[in-house]
Image (tube, rainbow over all chains, first blue to last red; front, side, top):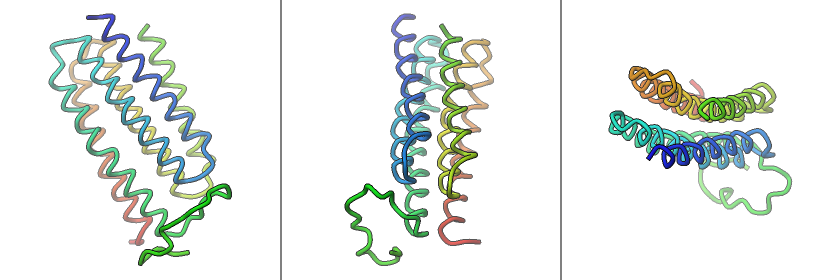
Length: 108
Length: 82
């Protein structure tokens, strides 16, 4: 059981490092939102559940924290991405298609 | 083994802080701060396991709630102003 918990926690820590590397290296605001949200959501979930497996007395509280992060992290990132698009921050030069120009309330 | 995990998470937080200093626009800085807070919640839970303190889980829960509300407020401010 201890080995399984260590493996789960290590996978989560690896995903957290990959998410931070994506935030550091991506060229654009929207790419950074994508990298920083998906990787850190999965990484935090796996790390916190892994600690709950390692220490079985703490399992229910770690499950509550992990579920809260699983719900709240995509909501806040979606709000930030929508706000930066509505403010008119440009996409990077390599991007080919932007359908949001047709919607109401979005600037060029 | 836990020390290795903590060092890896520390490298991730340092990368986020570099992006927060360099970032061209305000949205980049907000996104870097969002990522850094989510990474920090995981670091707090892991530190609670290493030091064997149950109270660190409460700290992690309150920290995640406060960072969520703060990010929503920052997004509102970027979109519409005060």
